[in-house]
Length: 362
Image (tube, rainbow, N blue to C red; front, side, top):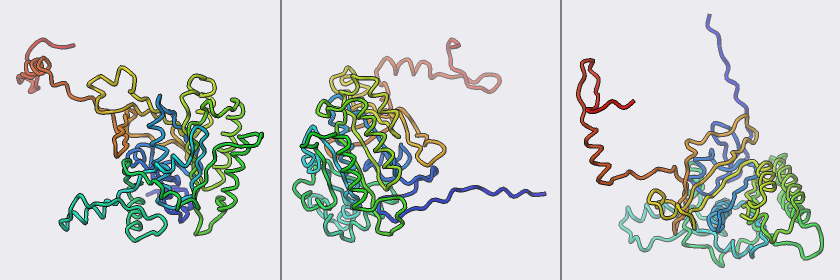
């Protein structure tokens, strides 16, 4: 008698929002981080409704690049963007967003014998062209776009203020963490981003908080935890995803850092080689720091995604930021080569096995 086994598969409503897709096999709704290599490592991107913490490196430059990637990817899909920063002017960060590279146009120009020096960067957010429609379809398949860090948006960001909101503190003497929450709640209400909304024209909000916990954020530990818990509960009930860069000042307070990481759904850490001994070692010359995954999200899933490797490093070039598996370079010195040649001599034993010539190594 043949028994029929019916596989259980949870049905998932996938809204028709550009840039939002269902990741496999966790079946989570995710949005791209803007870094294609990072999307592959963490399971497709940041889940919708998740809170991600990025522990900044010593200088804070590389975590700032990751935030710019995240915002630029949302700008491509016309997502709502919200940037909060007290250490610097938020508009300064927005003007440094990278431009997307239209690889389809570059490939077409090369095939038709075009001049490589005349290759242009596509940037038409206010008037979406068919070229960007092709880029969006390619983004759904690959998980993200390609950006050029050497070509910032610049003043053109002023034409997109309708989809971007900023917050740099309160002028009145009031509770700042409640004021920031009210600012985010206003975005949820204005755009009707509730999960109950099944409208085809729905959108998603990308929240970025830069250098959270720095001395400029004169918040008590209890206020920071209250804000994060309240923000996390709101993210669960709306089409939104939040990324917060944690200032190195918080690393001096282990209790605060542990509480923040416990609240977050995903925790990523950047260990830069700048000013450290590893910066001058030949084994690390191809990288700028180690990329640590301290916690992966499991939003609306039974288990977290298992990355292919946890030995990761990042490269921050002039035009691109990538996360790769860490590989030690081969040792090609003369001494190692001579020993390898001596040990490479093998003989065939009576049993048909191959054995090296010399002393047995137990």
